[in-house]
Length: 223
Image (cartoon, rainbow, N blue to C red; front, side, top):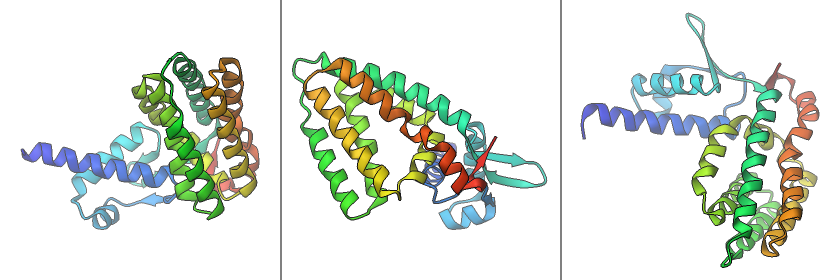
């Protein structure tokens, strides 16, 4: 492995770890980031950290002010709405494509629903989010266009932060599972019309809670 290739791989790892931490709110909006501290924590040199932060800045997840420092970007509801639009449009199309498959099998989706039920009962929010993501990813896989989910993933980082904020609410979690079950039922029955309605409603749920979450966590949001 060449030195440049090794550095690129390290930069990718640092970037992925920071994206996950920001997305899952382990690093909260507005937090100051230090290249030196991050390098020590991740046990890498400052160069891949600097490269990763530059990529995060391009993605709008951090803001770099020369001579001042780097901070994690706050959530903009406009960005969340744009992510919702992309996710809803692509997932409705994925649902329709999956319904057209004569060999459609929703067994994996049923298993993921049970995993969500367990994480709900045990109040394991990280696991709940993981199985939530896996369920939607499986719908795209069943459509035959799994790469489209990767495009959605890149787009919806701001939306995911809003979703994570709502997770400690047991009522919201229960409603999400119930909606997931209805979506899987509609898919199994190849009910395209019901699927369109359910997915659209589901995709807009987090955004509808945006004003309430903004009032609860005012320091996490910006205009």
